[in-house]
Image 1 (cartoon, one colour):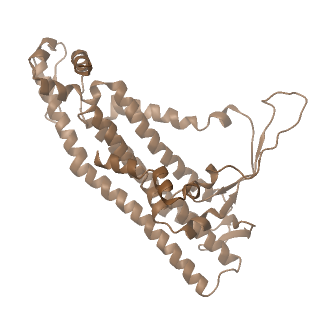
Image 2 (image 1 turned 135 degrees about the horizontal axis):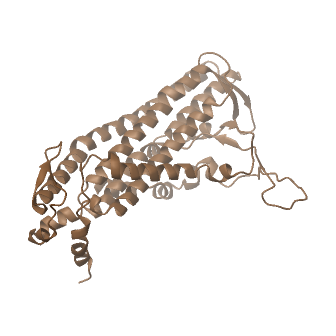
Image 3 (image 1 turned 135 degrees about the vertical axis):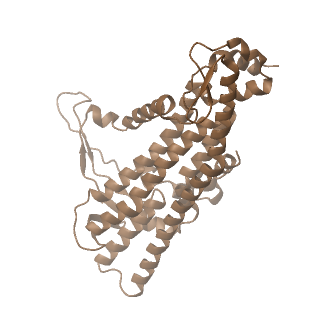
Length: 373
């Protein structure tokens, strides 16, 4: 709950309003466009489905700490290739790239450190308490039971005794009835929100890698083929070394951290023995996902942000009207639904061999507890 409060206290809007740089902290793509890049075909059909959008926007870097690293590195390589950086300028740019790289490593290191200790000190304890409480419930509510692979009691089929619930103390009832798996719909909604949060990070990771990999390969070592524009530089191609650096140092580690965080978060939320704490823990976990944006807003120098946003990649793609064009991003929502369903009913290992035998006796008790007094 403390992490959740801290996360709310340091939200993007709160930080921006305090520092007076709210509009500066908004990513370039989120600001109102300076000009309308769309052109509509004029034809005699008059149908809204008979036009396409000519997408000629420039996709600028600078959304988070990872984009700043790639954007600054491409910017410096481009300026070097354009013969606008020599002598002491090269030293400054090398120092800038090294400093941004260290901040990116700091972000990954802090995330890995917190993930490790959340698993060690928080998640594992919550799983143990949930297993113990449900094992005691199974032993009490069934006339016969067996031990599962974790050494916990599980009731045998046909031996359930609902009347035994009345003999439990109020404290025991509160503990077992607030097990998230006792209300699968509520748990699935909370896991769905948490999953979408992580899938948003995965989406940015894939798009970030795609931005660089889709560029034509040119040059050797770490180099970029660029041309000067009125606002900065436009990248037309990068070397294979730059593509490998992006994958190895940025895209792959970012994806791995997000996947581990997704699994750990689902496990912790499933083991949380309180509906209120499920919500608070979900907010606390969101702080870990948002850590790279927090460093982006508070640690990175303004000059680095400006240079990163000056580094652009021309898309020049024609967006034809189609079902896929209108619904492509909904695939992430479908994947989130599939993942949550698979996790709750097949993959979760918090309560192995869960019998879904809590809701039937707990719902009347929860209704009484929730009634106004």
